[in-house]
Image (cartoon, rainbow, N blue to C red):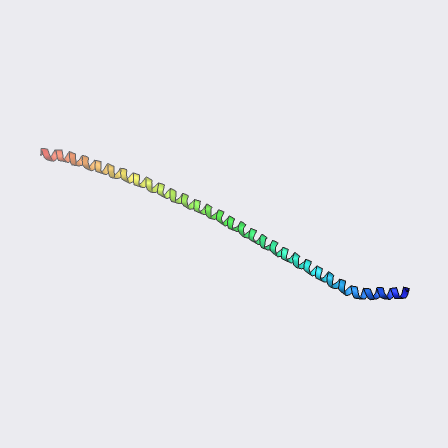
Length: 112
């Protein structure tokens, strides 16, 4: 019986080893596939996060450029306002001088 038992154990081993091998291979394969899927998802998430960060940085730099341009335009409008104000004063003083000269010469011409 001892010999029969050993033979049956050996026969069981020979039958079970390929079965265990295929089960382990399938399990390892499925675990590796799941790990790869999760890794790909994480890589995609990291890629999206990096892209979002780059877009936010670009928006920030665009806002700074926009702010600088608006400040430049504002300074141009202020300088134009100053020029128009000085031009308005110059024209007003010119008309005043011309009016005074006309009045003065009108008095002298009327007396001659």
